[in-house]
Amino acid sequence: MPSSAEMASLADGMEQYLTRHLLPFWQDHAPDREQGGFLCHFDRNGRPTGETEKTFLSHVRLLYTFSSTHRFGFGLGRSAELARWGADFLLDHYWDADHDGWAWIADRQGTPTCWDKVGYGQVFALYAFSEYALATGEDRGREAAERTYSAICRHMADTFRGGFYELMERDWQPKPPGAYGGDRKSMDVHMHLMEALTRFYELTRNPTHRRRLVEVIDLILTRMLHERYGTGWMHFSLDFRPLAVILFSTQWGRDAERKEEQARPLNNTSYGHNVEFVWLLLHACDILGIPRSTYAEPARKNLDHCMQYGIDRQHGGVFVEGPHDGPTTVVAAKQFWQQAEVMVGMLDAYALFGDEEYWRAFRNVHDFVFGHFVNVPGGGEWYERVDRTGHPLDTALGHGWKSSYHTVRAMVQCLGRLRALAARTPA
Image (cartoon, rainbow, N blue to C red):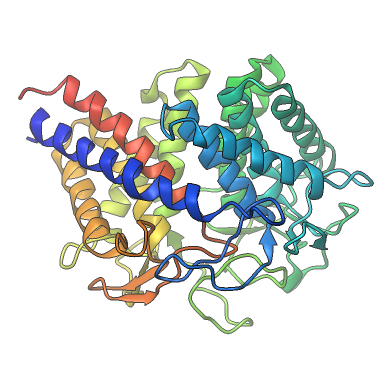
C-alpha cells in the first residue's frame, strides 16, 4: 500500500515541475507580443519554428490553461494576465458575427483562413470561457460561454436522432459525407461536450444546463459504449452505428502518419479517451452533487480495460489504442496526451475503489512520463510522441494541435488528488 509520504513526495515533485518548468514554459514562450494572441509552434529546444498559423484550438486551450492555473492558485498572477490576453485575441478575431460560432484557423494577425464550424472547437470554447469566468469573475467570460452554448444548441443539435453534428460549413450546414465528416459523430466531441457542460453548469447553476449535462452523459452511456465491454466506440454514423475511424479533410490534428483513405479497424478503442471519459464523468458527478458510485460500473470497465491491455508493463506508459476485446498490436509509439489522462484517471480509480493495481498503473505511467516524455532542457514541455521504449519520435513541444491543455491540466489535477489521498492515508 502506498504511504502518505510517497504520495506527498510525488505531489511535491509535480508542483516543483509545474511551477518552475512547465507553466513558465507557456507563460514565457506562448504570448505573441507583436500581433497578439499566442504563438503555437515550438521545436524540441522550445524555440519558435517560424510557423505562424494560429489555430483556434491552441488558443482556446491556452485560455483554459491560464484560467485554470490562476483559479487553482498557480502562476503568480501572470496566468490571469495571460488569460485576459488570450481572451482579447479570441473575442476580437475568431467569433463569426455573421453566422455565430468560432472560426477554426487564422493567420498570425488573426484573420481567419478556415471558417469551418468544427464541433470540437465549439465545445472547447464553452469549456475555456466558462473556466475563464470562474477564474476571473469577468462578465465577458460568462457572456462568451453563454453565446457559445446558444450556438451549440441551435446549430449543432441533431433534434431528429439525438446528439450533435460535428463538422459543418461556416453557415452550420453539415459538411458532405465521407472524408468531409458531415455524416459522422464521435465519442470524442460528445465527451468533451460533457466536460464543457460540467464547467458551464458549475458557472451558471442553471437547471436547464444541468439537464443538458445529464442528457449528454446518458447519451454517451447508452449509445457510445460497447454493449459487452463498456469501452468507447470512436466514430459513429448519424444514427449511432459504430464506424471505423477515418481522417477528415478539415485539418484536425497531428497523429502519426496514415494514408488518408486508410481507416482504423472497426474493433478499436482509445485507452486515453476511455480513461479521460471516466475521470471527467466522476468530476461531473461532483458538480451535479451525486455520488461517484453512481457510475462505478462503466468507470471500472474502462479503467480495467486500460489497465489490462493499455498499460505497457514491460517498458512503461500507455499505448494509444487497441481492440475492445484483447491486447493491442499497435506498440510502435506512445503519444503524450494519453499518458496525461491516464495518470489522472488512475488516481481517481485508486481513490474510488481502493485497489492498489490502480496505484501501480499510475506509478507506471508517471515514471515513464518523467523518464521519457518531459523535456526539461527544452523548457519543460512534453514531446509529442516517443517509441515504445521512450526514444523521441516527434520532438515538437508545441504545434497548432498540441499545447498546454493535457500536460498542465494533468499536473494540476494529479496534484490535488495526491494531496487528498495523502491526507487520508497512513504514513
